[in-house]
Image (cartoon, rainbow over all chains, first blue to last red; front, side, top):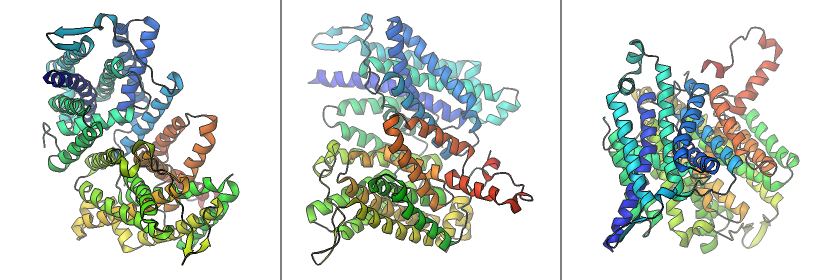
Length: 286
Length: 338
């Protein structure tokens, strides 16, 4: 029985790390650009499907893990240049509506390209099989997932905290105007940050693909969870996205066998409660 | 003003009601079936209710599906279990919708902007999973089957037989006209002007002495009641109340209809619902991925044509009046917003 709980807990951590990757992208974009991206779930979806195609062509999951997020990021960069940079100055409500439109287009285009039935993606051969410790059995892929996402998270933290680019992003979150006045091309910074944030959703999509496959209508669900995580952790907070992601992942995983709808009720209830009681989240600043 | 929706165009009330009446008569004549025309009116009601929040008070609610679904389930359960008639079931749906809107509204308006939107989104998801869980009442994933469509009766004597889709259309059309006139009356009243004041500058409206929270809750309840009626009518039309009624996608659809039609006028909601229901009906067979086009239209409307279809029509009418075009050089209202 205890093994089952440990199993569910590890599953929850893996799921939570995926949620963290999605949410941290959303939160960086919100922090620097003050932009609400309702297309984030759709880009996640695109990552999963591109992983399918890349695996189908090259037969190599590792190549897909490299290529698919880059393609997603490049696409996000193009969308930012063409459309999104024109709506930064609009109120959040209009940003929501425009990105909702983008999400619809991506979702329907995915169905057009890959068909209405989901695609399954095989676990890479190197990670097939299970880890056996005494009575406890756990799939390798899920362990890899936790480790790899943690690595990406660490890399992202170093990027934000230890590089010039990261310093600019953090400074820009404080005051876009000041950074701009100090001679930084703020629009280039915006484009790069948007591509980075969306690219992280792409990475999450690829990592998620061998678990649940690529499902065409998963975008809104993922978007909803990403917002739960971001709100609980605090809009714009890196640590908040990590803790929030793990919290939501573990709660969902622990409840799957008991009452899965109850898990959703709980996490959305928690989201509402956090907004009402502590709108800046557990880790955000007032 | 520059980043807001255009202010509502104040036309004359009788002229606008005549326009609605003409549309109600024309709809079944142009469209291939009365059922399609009825569906348009039902979604036009939902869009109109959404417009009261978005266009007139500036509240972007992702919670309209809650009231729509609740109206459908509420009326259906009242008719199935308690054998309620048409009018009492509709009234029940309106009260249920208003009650839920009171709950959602009272909590959601404690926050503004993005946090308000997030709250309505969270409530919408909670309502969905709650409906899913209470499958004994709602039928869960299968939906609620065999929803009746009671006839209009007086003392057991059938006055109007609503089983005929044409009769049902006329009934819904009369209801639509009444609700439209009522909503118009509300927004042209001092109450409506106060809502606009809240939309334009809430701080200032509060500073003048209006209890803006009070007004926002009231308009939420009105919107919830109308959306509840729309949901009830939809369940009667389909004889079925699917779980998708209370889905987030329903909230999004209602929002999209409202915005595409135009938030500057209640009539825009009829235009938006009509355009999207017809587009969906025609295109979904030819091209199942027509939602892609809808996404593009949504983006175009928000970025380039903030007035929606109604705004576009109004602009067209203005251009066609030759005497004015000479000295009226003001650029399109939507242009200045960019």
